[in-house]
Length: 345
Image (cartoon, rainbow, N blue to C red; front, side, top):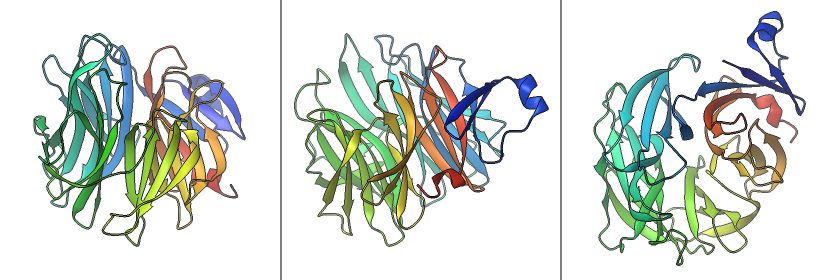
């Protein structure tokens, strides 16, 4: 297993025999490859549940293809170092994509995925599916279709992530159309109390083909939604609203998003993880204020087909699981980022 140490903006590639002779500087960023066993390993998430950390990612032959062989692996660890597989979620002749993990009010892990059939550069079908763990987090149910509010006209639908607040789970279901890139996409804000049945709160008034969206709440219950946009200027969007989440304020970011995720660092700052579109595409962490204005950018070792960071703050570090193809094959990586990297942004 190879580790990469990033110090003061420089990347130092170190083999195991070098690491054995010298410890990384205290304030370094350490990156470790976790998994590369499938031809294409991508779209991970990281989640802490009770006494374990969980990672999940998609394994398939390609990023997307007519094989429709995507499946989701879920692994767990007590120390973020040694990982063991808990389950493998799959459906016959169906592409399973982007599992996202959350904890239900009754003490189980909710897994949300999209399941569809791809043929010749378009999805013929795409629907939200869910699975649940038992209360130990060691056994998972089979995938089943989510029950979506019948008031919503069904298209190609995807609930990308669910976030819980005071016993209610909220997620954005984005809707595209046959042909994948055609039409004006919609973003429906949904709510659930059991993780299986979802009712519409409202359709978010966002242009630019909104899609992948992550929701967080501050300590006062204010909702923040980080939204990827796939047309027009393609710049990301940060939406905010107070309860009952019916009137939103929108701030346009100055960069595109891909696999967007974020956490509150404190009462005044966010850490946003996303694909970063520069001359060379990479996975990056953005320290921003609460309006999404950038204070600092940390680029993780990555390039090309990459991003979708899952993030957890633990023991004064930001732990980030992401995927990248900078070493030739799309693989899953773990970055340990000291929180001191975000000071004095």
